[in-house]
Length: 359
Ligand SMILES: *Cc1c(COP(=O)(O)O)cnc(C)c1O
Image (cartoon, rainbow, N blue to C red):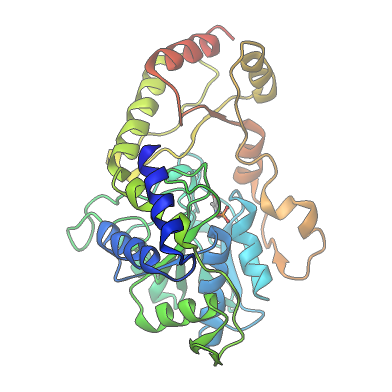
């Protein structure tokens, strides 16, 4: 708290609120911390995704009508970014135990040009080997890393543990307040190793200006402001701590919940590949369990109750395609329940597990 107040005060006293030194410092810290050659601080996670896609369009790598594969069970922002850019969103089914894209059953077509794996709930769902296979299919890969900042892959082809957000052509990060690293408002970031993509994203985010008042692209205003950058800086230092704490809580839940009707979330063999943005159990009578927990004062959430391809806004939408049935994503939406993980003590977790076990 004190650190945040000091950071905010420093910005207020600086008199510079946009494109100042704190944004630069924050971007440098992100690059260093995550091992990404370029980081561009932007306004939101949605804008981060949209800017990456729009930059691909400006660079001639994507064009309107191209198909982009997205898991159906993500937050709506992943789909919106694609359709806002005039690209076709193709909803894909997911794997039961990881909640992530099922790479063996991708709805590929000759028009498929890109794919957006979503590291849902904080679990890395892409590795170097899978990224290589997708690249060999000629696809542009964009990680939706909104929920997984700080997660690492098991050692892969290169023998290294790669940070989520550094596996693909580019990645979008969100600092929405409830995310693992949260701003005091909206903020996001783009990560990439591609200098041309980085330059184009930065330019698009700043009115398309190549230099001041010289607009070579029709850009947007999607900048991260100095206040958010300054307040995120100290939070970035606690990245590992956040992951460790959430992993401990998830393990504790998994060891204490013994209700036979509950399907526990799968803990990966390499624990650091999950930062547990959400802790999600499954139960065949999910709504009744949720009411039971609510009656005992335990608030829960459902991420997400309606898969994106079934959302009202995409009914009959010309840019939404669902080429095959998505039974797993649709069933998961009926069964999943997110238990509190952000601010719970060990004794809270014991109490919540008891309430679930007695249901
Ligand atoms: C939060 C989130 C976003 C969007 O981030 P905002 O900063 O809220 O715009 C995108 N994708 C996923 C998976 C998210 O969880």
